[in-house]
Image (cartoon, rainbow, N blue to C red):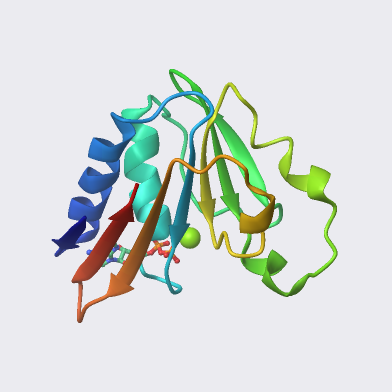
Amino acid sequence: MEERTGSAAETEAFGERLAAELGPGDVVLVSGELGAGKTTLIRGACRALGVTEPVTSPTFTIGQRYSGRVPVSHLDLYRLADLDQEDPALLEDYLTGDAVAFVEWPDAAEPELDRVTMRIELRHAGGDARELILHR
Ligand code: ADP
Ligand code: MG
């Protein structure tokens, strides 16, 4: 499925709609270049899942946990991309069966992920336009 958004608010709204399909144990991979809107989309999904705290890309850790109506994990594996030998247990704190998990820059971790609910790819499409490709 493909969709075009013309603003950050529209990308957030797309995330909100996706959240309706998500529940405990679901893992959503979100890829795309820097500034493509990964965190923006995840922010919308988190709002819809009842998260009220600020949703920003984790900077000094690989992830954070939010509490919404369900626990929500948000990972950003940007810096993991060039690390070959990472402790697989690193992800375990976040990918728990009770939580919905969103993973930015998932490439490094993807081989370790046994349950992936959906993949979303975001692309710059000129100015504030973005192309969102959803694989279920
Ligand atoms: P990423 O997590 O992919 O690096 P962010 O979501 O942090 O990207 O940042 C996206 C930036 O692009 C934000 O500053 C946002 O306001 C801006 N933006 C402009 N148009 C869009 C759009 N259509 N969708 C998402 N973000 C947009
Ligand atoms: Mg981000």
